[in-house]
Image 1: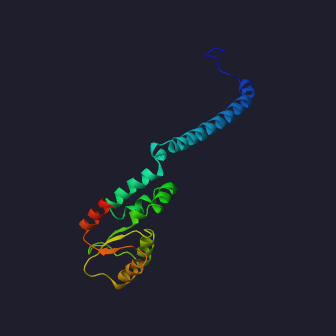
Image 2: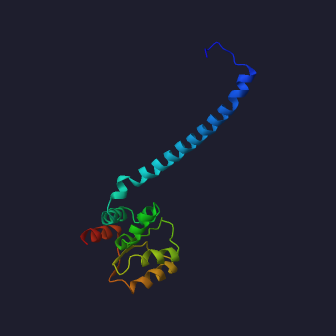
Image 3: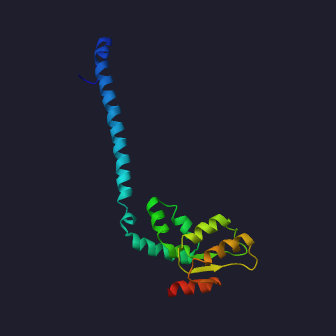
Length: 164
């Protein structure tokens, strides 16, 4: 068939089932291609280098983050299920608390949960001069299960943690 040929109505009608079949196959192939793109993206995510980092090394990185920013366990634990598990199994990262006069107060239940995650490790807590009684009561409950409890400046906290 040359390019100048205009098909007749009968030719168009005869070609219609073939065109519909080809369009159906094309739609199926496009759907398969999209499914493959999705699967490839998932596999790439699983192959990311950070997924191959051993949990003990992640724990060390998380501890360094906690030394730099005491609230980092909340952020790091929210990244993914694996990081949350590693963070929950890194009690030293939870043993640091710095509450300043300018920082928003932690709800006593959150503070209680936070301190319970450090287990029997020594707590390093920095508090402003005026602390609400509920916060003091929560901290006092955890002094019974901790080896040592010390109020200090944040610099003392960092110095003590780097020695341990």
